[in-house]
Image (cartoon, rainbow, N blue to C red):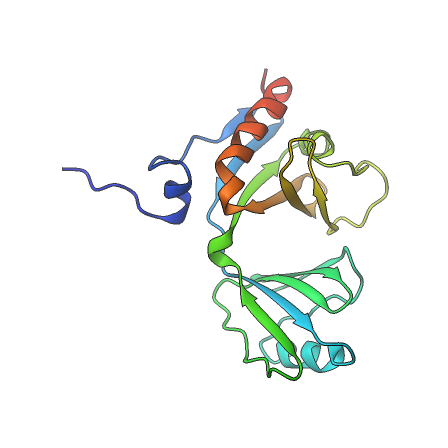
Length: 186
């Protein structure tokens, strides 16, 4: 008897993770989301929070919309004093209540890989951002999509994006990816 796959990714797709969407110059696939924590500093304590997180070897970017990789960890600055941090294999230090908050969002997010020569074109279909312009190759944007799903896109390299959505919209967003990527997979 086969045991059902009960990983968060499989549960998102009712027990079976779909095959990646492939095209001549596009690869789209769901990915296991590593531990994700939302960090927020109280007013006037940003430097203290940055220093505390640095003890774990993670550098927090200070400019909204930017991202920094520190080993396996990636920190995205959502706004001044607020970061979304992916930290596989890294335990974040305790944040004192007077400095800020740390909220574990690991079970609340789904993420997807979008990569290949057509990744920029697909990302532009998903988000109202001109990714073809001279952007920082590690930019991070949050927006609503035309499909009513809150979306965060991290441009990891020139041709690779990671898309984040709330887990409850993960299955629906996969269908959006299927529809929007169809022209690149023909």
